Length: 429
Image (tube, rainbow, N blue to C red; front, side, top):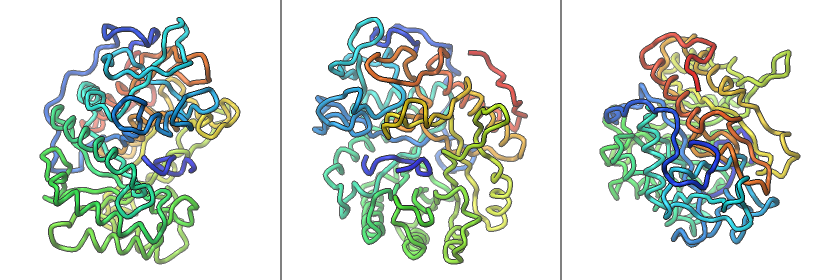
């Protein structure tokens, strides 16, 4: 798949010494916040959360997930799928899974984590709480649901959902389902997605006290409203059916957040233009949308934001901008190292987007892409600055492993307070 999309597969702190015990120190996190208000999607900075990592021996039965390695039985320099290696220093022994053949610079055994482990997901949510991040949009790939080709992954993904639900409850964060239709045949999208939503409602998942609501109704997001995209089988007709379903009065009614093209206003199809104006909220996927300045430095392209906001407001649609920290998928696509990388520039790539939102005024709701997406190099959680030496990996360039969570927390605080966000990062590593 390409970087226009929020997922790249059809399914599914302290720094050096990433093999150390849990005693490593990082910069002091923000004070723990009170429980996040789950009654509204407004006034939130929430991260996309993949939760799609499995390892041999984690109980999932799937070996190395395709998001760690192209081969479920091994990880090698040729099969590794990620751009960043997670910082494993804080994880407990039962959360660490050795990667045969991979070692850290000091010669010690390299390890990875599994989203199947409830304690690891809880740890991620504890980080969100400590750094002031409100919660997650949990990716739920339609191709892995009942009635779709990848149903064998259903139970594993449901287990991760339960890990997320429990972690949100224990940390006072919020969560919401974020369906992604990537790779799903057109004729399977509606039935598989609506069947699953009914299951989620009937089983009480969306009635959870930490599940995101708006106006008393549960909130649901769908990624996939892309026009003529080879990885998405969505059509305007299917889109209208989905919107009709979620708008229909009754037990399955929900507030629908559409996710799709950043160029949605330029779509030439009148049927698609009607679709975009029917959403309760719209979230244009901006990852990969960049510009370069005269010096050759990359910046997120935000030139469409102001007009997007105006058009959405005119149609009574809540506009949710997508902000991201950087991008890379060299290992993912087996490209020459560095070819696809958007350098993070010490956090300036990310911070400039918060500055722009502040300059526009009145915006305090953001979709942050993404918390744990190391496949496409957008992750903001803790990654190692001393990754294994057997393959190429990006790092945070010597910055603390919690640096990007700190930046997001600072940006969120200033947006919520409607405080001006300067162009220069106001905090120090």
